[in-house]
Amino acid sequence: MGITFTVITPCRNAARWIGKCVESVRVQSHRDWRMVVIEDASDDDTAKNARAAADGDPRIRIVRNNMRKYALRNVVEAIDRYAPHDSIIAILDGDDWLADVDALRAVAQEYEKSRKLDALWTFHVYENGKRAPLCRPIPDGVSPLDSDWAPRT
Image (cartoon, rainbow, N blue to C red; front, top):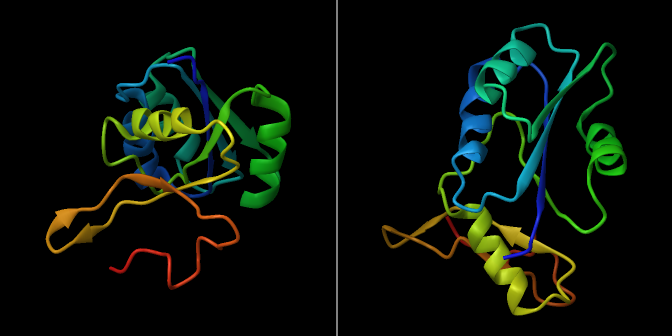
């Protein structure tokens, strides 16, 4: 597949989780990605732990803010500065992780079905004790937060 992902990870005081977050991207079966971890003036070892988890992988960039900018501003700036215009943007908070090694591949396959997609909502839920589909397109005119469309947990 010729699909590139830019995984943007805003984080603040996420030292406890950032290693697992970064590692969950590093082990993806879809290998065409880059990751930008934006450490937002943390009071802990978030940046140090992110660098350790990156383990020198050139696809991972750690950006440190000296002053707090907050997640939304960090994401917008990262898209503007670091994401190629032809990549799929994946936002993964520093205290979250991709629970499946095929997560990016599943998104890429869904995107391949119709390159007209503007947004793809991903989730990890269980229905009747079984994992539900990893991703599906957001129906036209529906908010991902619409209770009639969103998965029930």
